[in-house]
Image (cartoon, one colour):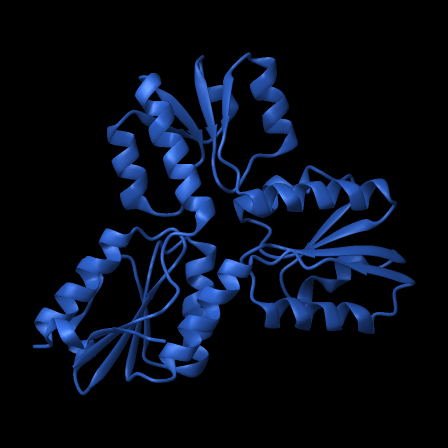
Length: 288
C-alpha cells in the first residue's frame, strides 16, 4: 500500500507561536497557568504540563504568578479579572483571532448586531463574544431565528470554518431580507489551504486518515470535508487508535492532520502505517 501525506498539514503559525511562548516562559517561571488547554492536542498539553504549565479553567483558580493566554484567546471579562489580580500576562492569542476580536468591537461601535458564523461552544468564539454588546452565534440554519427583529447586521466567521459553510450561511441570511449587511471574511487562509489539500488527496486514495484531537475544531472540519469525498475517512488522535482491519483492500492511503497536531505524531503514524502495509520509504510521498 502506498502512503501519501497531504501537502499542507500539521502545526500552523499560531499554534507554533503559542507553544514557543509557553516554553520560553517556562524557562524563567517555575509555574505558569494556561487559561484552558493551550491547544487542542492532549500530547502537547501533557508535555508542557511536565515542564510546569498548569491548565486551569477560570482566573479564580490562579493564586498568583503568570498566566498564558492560549492561541484561542480570552474573553474581555477574563482579561479584566487577570489585570485586577495583578497577574503577569503572556499573550499567545493567534493574530487572526485578535483581528476577529477587533472587528467584532468595531462593528459593535458602528451600530451593527454582530453575527458570528461558528460553534458557540468553541473557545475562540467565546473569546470573541465579549467584544460586542449585541452578538448572535449562528452554527446552522436552525439558529437563524436569533436574528429576527434586527435590520443592521455585521457578519464575521470563526477562523476555522470552511468557505463553503460561510458562503452558505451568508446566503441564508441574505434571504431573510435584512436592511443592511456588512460581511467581513475572517477565515484563516492556512486553514483553507489545509482543507483544500486534504480534499484533493482524499479523492485520490482508497482510505484517508485525519490526525488530531477529537475536540479540535479545525481537525473535525478536515474530517467532515474528507468524508464528503471519501467515505473511508477516519479521524484518529494517534497510531494507537488505528483499527488495522480498516486497511483491508486498500492500495493507497492518505494522511493529513489538524493545525494542533505535532510533527512527531504525523511522522510516527506515516512510518508505522508504511511498516504494517509492507510499503517502503520511497512510497511515502507528498499528496501534491
